[in-house]
Image (cartoon, rainbow, N blue to C red):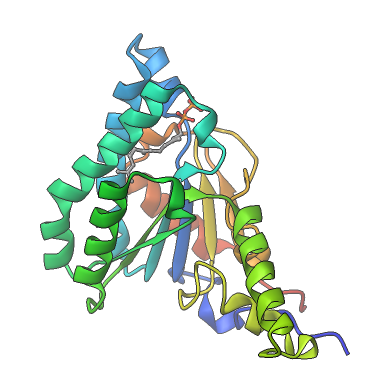
Length: 248
Ligand code: FPP
């Protein structure tokens, strides 16, 4: 018997005027934004961090439950060392300068990805931010760091195989729900809307399992220009789409 896919019920999102519960964004185009202005790439990333602040504020205002941002992919290690260091520095700065306000606004902070390759002080800051805000009940802000969907799926497969080998899990009992319970995104609402900025039309190894029933939206705006109104427009366009989850 094949197991039913773990899929959200239609009531959880989509349809006229409905606000998506979980929005994910591939924040692309910082480098091109800077290049157009003959600025160094880091200037684009800095402006990108401002766009993150705007997106978080707007997501909270719209009543979105979870916002997942692709801040650093497992493939981004291929970038020059100084750019990687700039990105990590911006993240440190963002955490230091925003955590009080995020906490005061009821935002729950969470990270996904494999953190074994990140610098230990940054991991500590990220963990502290997650622990400090764990009890909050507002928007869940999820930052994907050293995240790759294939890596996430391999980690799930390994953990299931290890439990099966140890006799703790019957392989026949593995279904979509069991699988999902071991993903980094465990416990988050189903992904309703995935946005990529800058005109690229790829998923680039982001949330491949979670995107199974998500609405995909590709917008031309470069990430640093993606302001609160742009997110409101995307959410309004989502509300006009019809989601059928394989039904009629
Ligand atoms: C893609 O632009 C963007 C990134 C790889 C990183 C996103 C990082 C930020 C927005 C800054 C800090 C993040 C947080 C959470 C505070 P790109 O450099 O690939 O642009 P390009 O394709 O135009 O070169």
